[in-house]
Image (cartoon, rainbow, N blue to C red; front, side, top):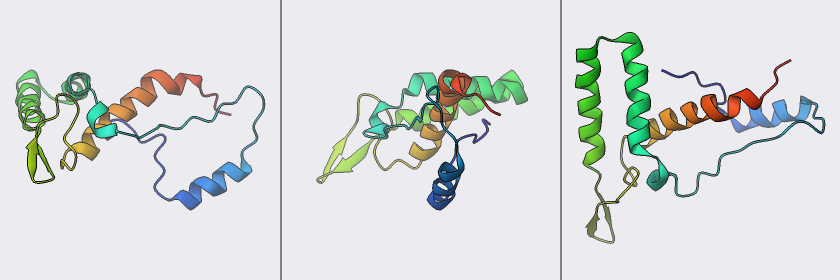
Length: 122
């Protein structure tokens, strides 16, 4: 699994860490806008990420079996809103038990692939 390089579990720890940081004109503070996150998780890309992570530690048969199960879970993408059943065309259904895990996998990959290289660690 991907490492939680940027996970903040206690907001007071973040506040304390930000107070002691020294910024110059080349630094950037980056945050993710989580608005409408559930419908904007690219499920096909996330499945590719999961496959690449699984194949590192499992044989092809186990990887395919797990990926089939994850694909099945993500395809059962229904939720109830105002007493009506909805099936979103993309993303993960609101309230889905796999939403947080799917979002975590995608966002950690996104951070590692597209953001991490912008950081200079001292």
